[in-house]
Every structure is written in C-alpha cells, then in structure tokens.
Image (cartoon, rainbow, N blue to C red; front, side):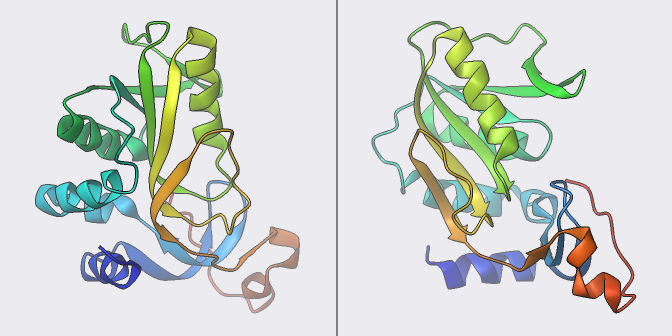
Amino acid sequence: MNEREVISVFEETRALRNGHFELRSGLHSDRFFQCALVLQHPLVTARLCAALIARAPDARPDVVLAPALGGVTVGYEIARQHGARAIFAEKDAGRLVLRRGFAITPGERVLIAEDVITRGGRVQECIDIVERQGGAIVGILVLVDRSGGRASFAYPLHSLLRLTPETWDPETCPLCRANKELEHPGS
C-alpha cells in the first residue's frame, strides 16, 4: 500500500480533516487525523495493519503494547495478525501505566503500536514501561507519523504514512491571528 492509497483511505473515511485544530501535543495545525473514523471499519483496519506489518517483517512479537485510547484498535489488530497478545497502557495520575493485570515478562518480544504520532510522547512512555519490565522491544508501528522527523526513538519506527503538516505554537499560529475557529478534536 503506497502513501497515496493510504491518504485515499483516510479521505474516504473522513479521517483526514482540514481546519484549525489544537493537537494533543498543544500545537496547532491545519490538518488533523481522526483515526477513529478509519478504525471503525474492521476490514479497512485489517488492510491498513497488514500493510503496516509488512514494513517490519522480522518483528515477530510475543505481545503488542499500545497506548490507550487511540492505539488500542491498531495494537489489537496487529497482535491478531501476528498471533500475539494485545495489551494497552492507560493514564494514571497523568502518565501511562499497565493496569488490569497486564504485564510484560522479562525477555518477551514487544512491538509498540500507535495510530498517530506528532511528538511521540506516548510511544516513549510505552518504551519506558517495556524497558522497566525487562521486555525486548522489536519495533514501533504507527499508522501516521506526522512528526516531520522530530519523533526519534532508540528502536526502529515504521509507519504507513509520513507527513510534515504545518504545526505552530499557539502564540505564533497564523490561524489564530486570522480568528479561525479552533477545534479541540481530542485523540
């Protein structure tokens, strides 16, 4: 699946939006990926995740870890296709942790999955969890890397789509200066 095909899927499902958005990172942008709108279609999700898995054919994870909430569906489908366990990290006191009895056994091969990254903070929190529990990270898979190369990790990162959309700090945002209504779409 090439980038044009991926963009077409996002546009067809209305998951790629244009406007004035405040991202979870606090930055403002004129484009927003609402991955939940593409991920509500299981057959499309399966196709996207299969294409993503093909980018890291040697990963062979025992477990796939995703940050809640956006990465859960991606992580589950990637785990399903690999025949691996699927677990997720969720916020507790402002940071991601494993709850609900989820654990990583020392030496277990862990693949981290996410829907979209801008700065990569949630992926880094997942990396920290895996390292603290003694897991062996075999890679990171994301549907959309919109970091423009700013998100960098100590492990291989693979994505279906790499974009460098314009983002601005709120203080320098031209859309704010033009009084364009700001949307807070969430994750």
